[in-house]
Length: 306
Image 1 (spheres, rainbow, N blue to C red):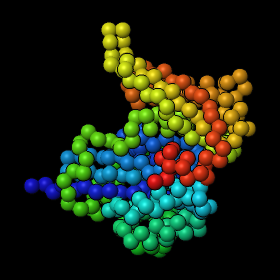
Image 2 (tube, rainbow, N blue to C red; image 1 turned 60 degrees about the vertical axis):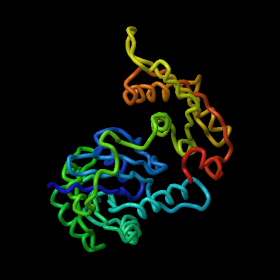
Image 3 (tube, one colour; image 1 turned 120 degrees about the vertical axis):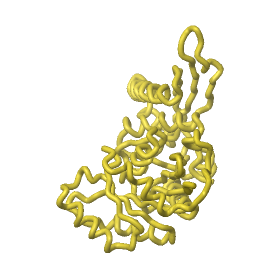
Image 4 (tube, one colour; image 1 turned 180 degrees about the vertical axis):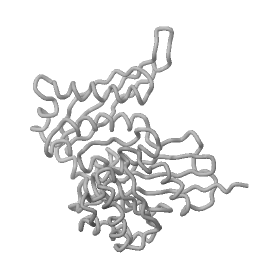
């Protein structure tokens, strides 16, 4: 009889090393939003990979970074540290240095992750940016930093070498029946994913510090017309509020003549239609909630703090 394995794996690392890109690649679906900006992911997200004799529950986590007390950045770091304490394996993702050396900031984070006392697999991402002759010296350099369970190079962006990663992770998972039904992909509600898809567009369209002050809250998610009919595809109506923390940011988010808000809404609607498999009517409004990124009750309301 074939042994079934199952367990939880946290994907951790510094901001912008490709954690969410790898998370989505492993699952074969876009669950976590991805932008070129660091600290796009604000909370841990569950994604379940199910195979005939293997089930891995991956936790995508916010980037580990120095954070001031009491605000959203501290909540993000706490989410990651908490995730490491709850899993069977930690997958520490680093970005391959183009010169084939260990970056001091990445080394500092790696040693912090090693303190989790969990089996740690070091995953070197973005190998598509490194000349092949420098890859083996890079692996050798990282092997001197800590005694990792494994060191595994890949490119989450291109998919190179990603396919074998679940089998490698399975070596360190317990024998266990499946933890989730086979059709479960994530624990994120559709309305939560829709809010994230909207926020993704503002992360991409806005400049400087403004996108980090944006939160999105879905106030209405009307599925009453979702079922397909003789007239064609079904329809979901979504009313979402884009929240900023200063009055001056409201005009920036709306844009001249409402153009930026319209552009973000159009882009998000297309992504949400792909997610829901039906037509979507998306209405966006903007509201100021002063200093929400530092207020514990606001952070809890938006799901960034327990």
